[in-house]
Each structure stands twice: as structure tokens, then as C-alpha cells.
Length: 320
Image 1 (cartoon, one colour):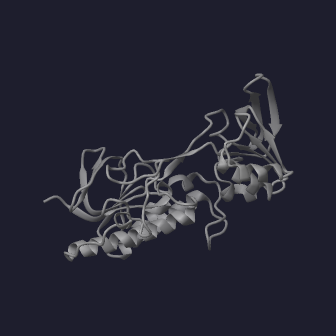
Image 2: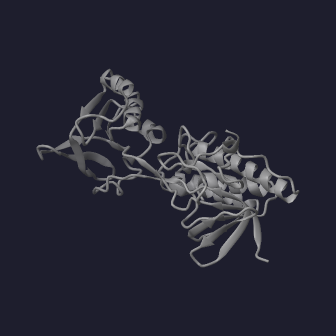
Image 3: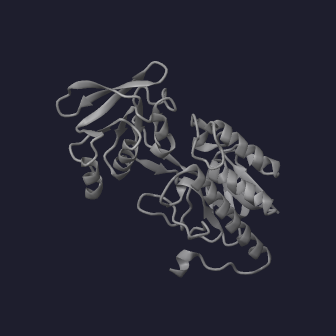
């Protein structure tokens, strides 16, 4: 008989680590599998100022605190890449790059997502020193400063409007002549005097000494080059969920985010989703942590009913 865990968590960001903490507190036999260092994207955040009750902390420190707290309750962590996930009526199987296969009654997917990048010089170098992919997270650092927002969709315009409440000047740089954002948002944009639209333009380089000082631009129609003096660059050209491992039967929306019920259970019984991979209104650290808590409680309830021989109730999607 192969060893079977009560819960396997795939992904070690805030959602996965919180899920691990709550699974251990529920006395579930649990293992968390993460291919990289635990912490996810917050581990590379320079500062985190919007996590309730915690002030003056870097993303790396917050991630370390989450890891230590989960480990203090006995959470086992395995640093391995997951290569496959197979669902079953009784248990689910998680294949690792080492060739080992882990089995579990309940599975929590906390694989997160990846921001789409411009892939230009300076973007990686100034991450956390002027380059950001989250206005809600980092906007306050640019109070009364000049920033550039890159993108033309709803998210880019929403974030530009948000930044206009803080910054003295916002350039909205878009590679096309017209924005993709909804008409209502475009109306608000036109009514905001702090925002200047820079159409038909792409960034070719982000420049600075210690932090961002300017961006090099090029007009896609004329080829003319220019430079904007800015203190920060906010990039909103898309966000892709890490859904390559999602097994068949798990419902996703048109953008590839996993659909789940109030208890974070997916359309496949015993499989739960937490964090940025889940379809929801906002992606924030505190929301990911909340997902992890809910998914863990849901998974623990599922495991207990399975062990007691009680058929778990149908998923919310099955009842729809």
C-alpha cells in the first residue's frame, strides 16, 4: 500500500502556506509541494504595506514568517516540481519530477499566476525599485511623483485612475491608437486631468541609476523615439494563470482561471483551489491567504466525511 496523505497542497505562495497552516491545525496529514523557494511572488516584493496588522516588512520577510509559522505546526514541505496530477474517485495522484508519485484524499491547487512582462532592458533590474505590476500594492510609494502605466485594457485604466489619486502625473502608454477598456472607464480617464494618454507607443527601455528615472519610448507608426521622465513604471498587459497542470474535469473560465464554490472546491470533488489561480474579483496577498484558509477548512471537512464513510455533498457547480 502506498502512503496516502489526507491533503496535498501544490504551490507554496501565501495561499498554499496558509492552507498548510490550517490543515496542520485540523490534524490533517499534509504535505506541501513547491518547485522553488516558498513565498511565491511576494518573496520578490521590496515592501509590503497592505497586509493587515503588519507594518514595515519586506515581501521576503513576510514569506519567511509564513513558512516558519506553518513549519511550527509540523507542515512537511517538499521542494520538487509537480509534473502531473491525476484525479480518482477515492484518491488523487500527484507526480513529481523525481518520479515519485504522492497520493491524497483531498488536493489543494495553489499554483498562482504570472504577470505578462514587456521583456525590455531595465524591467527585471528595477523590479521593486520603480517597476511594479500592482498599483494597489505599491502606489503609495509614488505619492506626488510621476509614473507611467503601460497597457490599454480595463485593468490598466483602472490602475491609472487609482494612481492619479496619489501621483502628481500619470502617463498611460498604449501600443495602439484606441484603448480596449470599457467606455465608462474611458470616460473617467478623459475626465482625469492628471492622466496623459500616450498612444501608438511602446517602451523600449527602463532607465535609472539606483531606481527608475526615465523610460525610452518609440512611436510604432512613425518610429520616432522619445523619453519620459518618470519615477515609476506600472505594467498591466495581462496576467496568466498557471493552469497547465489542471486535470481534466476541473472547470475554468474563458481566461483560464479555475472556477470554485464558496468553500474553494472545484467541479471535481476533493480538489480545491486557492490564490491567484482561482477566479475572483481581486488578487491580493490577504485574499490569497483567505483562500488558503477556506480551501483548507473545506478540504479537512471533505477528508473527515470520506473517512467516516459519509458521501460529501455535491459541489456547488453540480447543484447549479
